[in-house]
Image 1 (tube, rainbow, N blue to C red):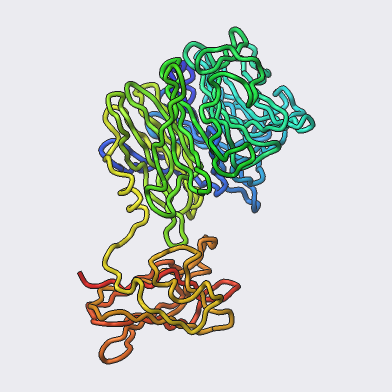
Image 2 (spheres, rainbow, N blue to C red; image 1 turned 45 degrees about the vertical axis):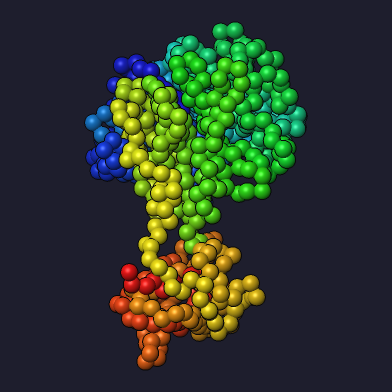
Length: 606
């Protein structure tokens, strides 16, 4: 998160230039927060945790995003600016003026853009680099996203492989970028800082922040405080790379002296290593953790400043032998690092996690931690952006949802607007059909809201329609089962996961499953089917008849043909029944044509 103080009037005015697109409709989420979907096509590869795809200058917002390309498995990179009057302007990256939009290979989590606007309004973009040489673009006209052209040849270290660019603007208007360099011949991948001098109009290598043989540097965040010092946040991983990282670290670089200090202000020897003494590491190893352990581990972190001091670090951490990452907040209290778990996924039930998205902001007397909460719901992942807020006078965090819940993972980045301290959130929904990108405004003149509990947010994510399920734990029989661990009892055990499904045998072209329970008046029958790895509809039950058993025998209450939904609800209109069965005429549209049923629920009349 960057708190941007001011920005020249020239730069702000320049950002208003460009082709005007009619403002999108804004949806009011609460009395304070508004969410606006961008009116542009977005690619499903628009997702990362480390990136900085937005900048805010005055009342103008700039978003960078991956957009669909004509070729499969490739994308273009587009920039969009929103002026104070709500008008959007869009442009793409080009090799030179008037040429076609450049395309890049899809590589989720790596080939995503980071941008920064310097004090003259010139837009800088670093894009699509996964251990490869620079891809750098710059606007020819201040503030105009339609004039972004390739300026890679002007970068230093053109023979160096680059990954994970994170950006910041200094109080003097100079631009900064922190990257991981691929010095693989030395058995290390280092953290290197570069600076764009507005006076010289050129980028130059500033310093190597951290490097150690056998280790890989993972940039997390970069902020420049009003006093000109550069605050650097990163994680360590084993060389050459690993999805699980460790030893979350923080240091401050002073360009005036060329020196590095830790959180306590102690001068450090450069480059920093994992063994550097002092108050660098905010997340040390815990028992059972090593540089190569998959759990416990850190993944993704962001920092916030309070003036020129560190306000705190938001990050994700997974405990030993767990798969779900929790959201933590760490701060320096003057003598040591203080850590707290803000979002405990284990306390929220099975299948709840955070996605690789976290940010933190600070303004006035409040701190806000942003993340994305996910829940597994019968083979589907549903997610929603969440903000936790705490005032200095309070002892606990309050929670609120931001934007709408949706299928698949979401990603975010947040920046505080200097004019009113409102948070501007970049909300990417790459798994939506089609992928979407939204801009949320979370004002600071009132507490975020409506405030709610995390358990309520998770219940909303699960979208449980409620009711008493009289089929839960009932006796179930079926025509066949694929294996001994895919028997019919799994369709009535109340567990909605891939490991708990009835799956019919291959070759059983018309399978059936029957459930017996105590007689009850039924409101509806719900059938949940599919497979989490299938993001489409091929694995759901295709065509089937739903029957209930009454005193008169079996009777149909609904026939489904050509189904594409994971959840099908069939009204039962109060009929008294002691059994439900599915007679399946078309198990699925998948290559392995079997029935896959998570749960059969017989919901009693209230």
